[in-house]
Image (tube, rainbow, N blue to C red; front, top):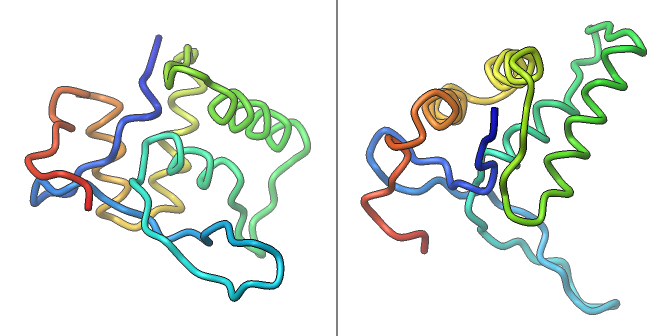
Length: 123
């Protein structure tokens, strides 16, 4: 199946979700943060690469997660073709590692992309 991982996740209030990331600054300049749109791909990559300290993940699953995260991160047009098993793993991991609002928005985006249309612009 083909998915648009560049779509911005939308909260239950209809607003586009954002994430705070380090802003790229010149060497020697103080670090700054900036808000960027939170995409389905960003949530998927964060979940695929997450592991709790008490959690054991075998090498085979680590490799599978790495390959999926790499596939999502390297897409040029935001479209990624995923097998059903891979999509199930991504959904499971998003549900495990993401906050409720992000997990819910991501699942809606995966299962019904038409419901992810924001009613407000990203600021």
